[in-house]
Length: 183
Length: 192
Image (tube, rainbow over all chains, first blue to last red; front, side, top):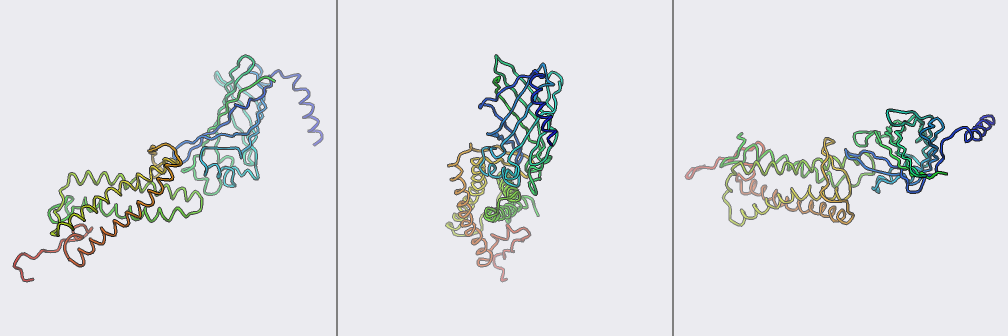
């Protein structure tokens, strides 16, 4: 345990010196949204509270890192019933699992884009998730768009009768649009 | 069992629409009143979806029925005083209006609430109005009270049919019954 802590501490000391990826702060206007399906129609939702630590350099992917924590109880979808159901034990179970966590394990070039590989911990389940990354540099500020599709049942979101995908679709699109300011 | 109506009775086509819709309308109405008391669950969501699917089916059947009736002749009214024939036709007209108004008010409520509308999990139908809390409140009251009004009109419709059948002993109900045969009208002068 102490050895791990020490190693981690060392890593944090050394990383900024060896890695050249730029650290950014995420501006409040950034969004983290999702699109699910219910009864054959899509609905859009968003997580209004999340924290993203972004280190990114398209020229130095090896040193880049995303670390995102999402407050699951902050999900809104424009429907009262659904917004009350989502934090309940039937879905996110925020009493037990208040946060979701995504952290990258590596980046790779894919065609003329970039994908971020990482692991997502949601509802007590950790699984690999791959994000499509679109980085748009600006003068100082930059924007970062990521997109992926997660299957809610992989993470046990929707228990009991709510596993029925003929009413609530399994695949959920996740999109983030982050406005970045260099630190 | 002629598909089309003739001078003495309704054809299989007309009877098919009449009884299928009677069953669907009554069943869906009672189903609708019952389901609102269910505790929130996916089963409740699916129950509501079924209610909506049946309602949409009734609406579709209504238009098919109207088209069928336009191409079909109808048996002439049974002999009765003019006011009774008028009352019967007004009742039928009201029933037709309510058969459309019931599913449409439900559809408006569903749209104003922002719910999707799916027919037996097969395809989706568009909203009739935009999401709006006020419209939603009015639409659900209209939807519910129109059903009570429909029940009232049905009391007149069914009551009259039974009165014709059991009291007047004429063919009004028989010519619409699924397997009914018209009573033989004794030829004039027949002692039986």
